[in-house]
Image 1 (tube, rainbow, N blue to C red):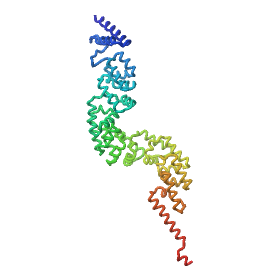
Image 2: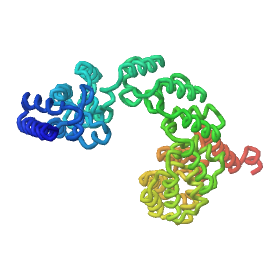
Image 3: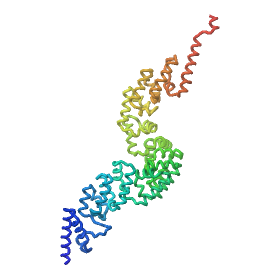
Image 4: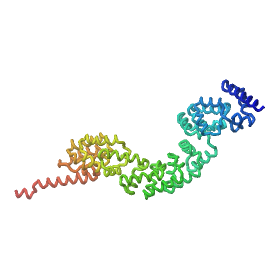
Length: 463
């Protein structure tokens, strides 16, 4: 009797499967439903799970339907070990709602793959959330990208979103700005808002004002997701190199992305700067203040930058001086640095002169080729300065060509002394100093010389 029951059940199941697979009909659905709802003992022997209305097994028709949309069935199987799926009459209406919301097929497949529970949502709730997202004025591409990456925006609990909105609005953010924050970082929905208060309090302890905290939340909302202990350790290590709380505040407000680092990452970079470049803690603090981006780099990339300079014949001491003075060079690749050196060689500076120039003014490597060439041509060919004079006064190359030509023209017009004076005195003084120390003093000297050369009345009488 048991064998007959098993054979009969298997025959019914196969017939139902054939009808359901070949012809999508109501009888096929009904037959499959009746087949799956067997006595528990028979179900165990055949190997099919019994399910209630809350737990339904995958069936072949649903697999075909979802695979046609591009849904990764295998990924869902791995994530959802219970093997939950929904029948065609249940999933089709929800997929139609997604299509009617102007979402493309790829986006829908991504949403279902990452959040298959969306097909269990109430149709009314799904329509409301899609309608709201469309009302925010997002383009179709932005909406599709947003939901592909963050399907949580459709499946969140209403109580969670209300708590998050209440927190953001308590910080004087209107509803529009609050939703901007949520859309830029949807993961905030799944986090307890109490942890946000802890992060805000840590920022307050660094004397960051409420408006500045709001700016960080708006432009870098992922800051609120940082673990409390991680952020606390980070702020502590920053303060150990920058004792002035005002400077710490300015750095964080200027570059909030630093908050995403860990204190271990900053410690590693600081140790590398100390051991490899010989910088003191005070110098590291100065770097932190002038170029905080350096602490977002890895020790490997820093070592590569130093090796690039050394491969061009620059010793470690000069390399350290150059990189401390102009830390932005740490992001230059080898080809860019080599081209800068090649430009100076083209202008007929020797290797020794180039090293001297970099010692006096490391910023030379940051100037464009046209800029350096125009200034050197004018200083050498028009004004008559030697290469060595330019090397010893390399800071002059930081002046604009307009300033150089203007100062030289005024000197030529108001001075009878055609001898060259120091480029630093001519070009590096302020306008007031130039008028007073250069033009006026030169005028007095010339007058004194002219008076000495002309005989006085008594001298004339004697003659």
